[in-house]
Image (tube, rainbow, N blue to C red; front, top):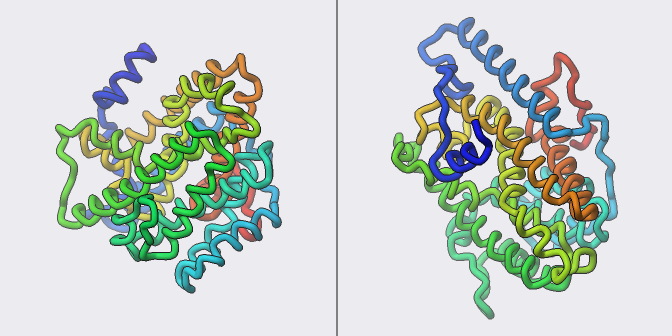
Length: 359
C-alpha cells in the first residue's frame, strides 16, 4: 500500500485489515481446558516475540548496549520528590520506578547538560506516578491546573506545578508552552482513561463508529510531545535557529514514540496483565479486530515513520543525533527493566541482555 494512503487511513479513518481471528492473551482460554489454554498462550507468546524482534531489528535497536548508572542523577531526582513529603505509599512507588526514570533520562538525553537530564528524569517519574497511583488522588488530578496563586490540595501537584514553571529557565517559549500544554493533556487524558476503564467494568466498549477516538485519546495520554521537546533545551538548540527544523517532523516522531511504547508494552499489558481502556484495546474494538492485529500493524508501520523523520533531519546532524539517541534510550526503558517483562518473554533464546540487579 502507498505509504501516504496508509498514513491517511490510519490517522484519520483507521486502517484496512482483516482479523487473523487469533485470540489475545486476554481472551484466550475461555471455555477451554488447561492444556488448550497453555498451547494458545505459547502460540501467542511466539507471535509476540516474532513481531517485537522484527520491530527492534527494523528500527535499528542496538541490543548490545548495557545500562549505565548515574548515581548523581538518581540522588538529585530522589531529593526532588523527597522534599514534597508525599508519604510512605507514594514514596514506595517512587522507589520502584526511580531507576527506570533515571536510566531512561540518562540514555535518552545523554549529550544534554546534567540538569536537563535530571529534569527529564523527574518528568518520567511524574508520568510513572500518574500511571501507577493516579486512582489514589483522582479528584486532585481532575482539579489540576496552573492558575496563578491557586494552591493544590495534594503535594504531588504542588511539585508538578513548580517543576513545569522551572522548565522555563531551560527551554524557549515554544518548547516550554508545548511541554506545559501537553502535561495538562496528559493529566486530563489519565482521568479519561481511568473513567473508560471503570466503564469497561460494566461491559462498556467504544462504539465501532468512533474510529477517530482511540487516536485522539492516544495523543493525550502518550506524553510523546513532552519527551520530544525536552530534547531541545535553549542552551543547546536555540529556538530561533532550530524550531523550524524540528517542528515539521514533530507528528512523525510523536507517532514513533507513542507506537514504540504500545509495541513494547504489549506483553506487559495484555499477557502478564489484563489492562483495559488502552490504545491497542480501544483501536481493536473500533475496528472489530484482535489485539494482535493492532500489534502487527504497529510493528509494520512504526519503523517506516521513524525512518521518515530521520530522513527529514539528515541536513541537521545535531538534531538527528539527539533524536536517534533518544529512540535508543527510550527502547532501553522497555528492554532493560522488569516492569515490561521482555527479558522473560525472550528467555529461551536470550535475545535481550539480562536484567541488572536493580532493574
